[in-house]
Length: 272
Image (tube, rainbow, N blue to C red):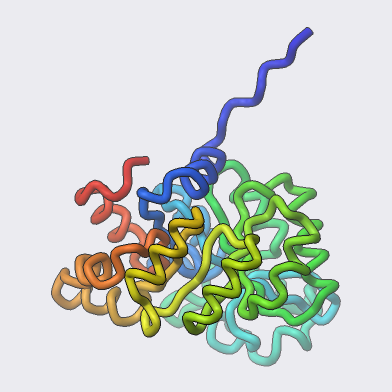
């Protein structure tokens, strides 16, 4: 008896667009959609899913007892009602804390990587911003991805592109996103023929260099954080300015994901 293939999920469609439709600009919610929920929380991830955002960016760290969790800072002071270095806390100690929103404790706790992967499964792409310099933690991260069957929807962000071949070898099906800091980095990354997307800086952006990237069917990731997000809030000109100045960028990370998605749909850059 022939079994029918499982129905294509939203994440499958997004993964296909990511690889095969570079003409569609994709929106990334920085630390998930955290306007009304704590950053890097399950609530913020659920909100990103509800809004129909393409990608949620989250940050990976680990506790003293090696539990992989989602938090941007090395200390818990800014984002929770506790104090101290996350790496000095056990997972049980971390679970006693609550995430803050507008400086006030919420019901949200620091989520584990496994919880985030399971919530995102089939619904949204994830950019895993790996904050650790620990090879064993990389392997455990990849194991969690494989166990949750979310391989197709994960981008693994590397601050140092030289490690891309080592990470890629663990599981070539996970999309690796190296960071480039100058033009020479871009050329070396492209020579590896591993990356599906490169995180660039506007400071070395040129149309000719970016066209070289897209000609190799690699996406270009850049930030709207800060300058362009702030300009949009102040005068509603930030989004147009980014697309005008960096026309080849086709993955945009922002603290205003809902607004960016609406703008891209209105201007015909996003059809999903």
